[in-house]
Image (cartoon, rainbow, N blue to C red; front, top):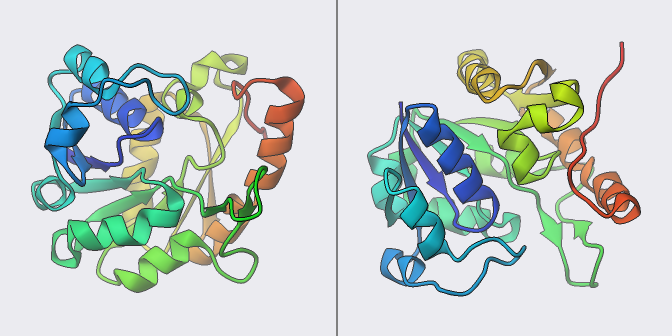
Length: 226
């Protein structure tokens, strides 16, 4: 498939690289491609500078949000949750219409410091906000309950014996996303239901953050035993 991955932080490049390695044609979307390619400072979580990452993943294109989305069959929102709606608006509603839109972002609110809270929470979710704002997109919430390395290499934790959730209104879109998840190595894919169930998936983050703090690593995930 032709896939646009919006976001150049830790998650976007991880997903873009993994999908490119699976043989998909991948373009990363960013506000300013020239500035992004010119980055020489390490990533926020200690990863390599974007320019260094891109040199090792030269098959992945870099374009504006709108250019990336326009040329894609499927779009991944891997932007910072607080800026996701603005980034998707920059991508263009017309460029998202009819397409599967995978949302892996979390609405983290750092206004009161660390650890962050969620906004929205409980009675709404970022996944729902995206679906309401872009009603012609086929939004599927997934992968937001784990760190980037586990998203793209689930076998690295417990041999892959852990769970990933999908939420969305469009059954066909969820089938497409589940196929990509399986290609990445995820085996226990749980369909939570319509996009309102993204509230529950996003509310995993408070406990995820506490487990991360207790273990000192993000190399873990949750398993629904049944």
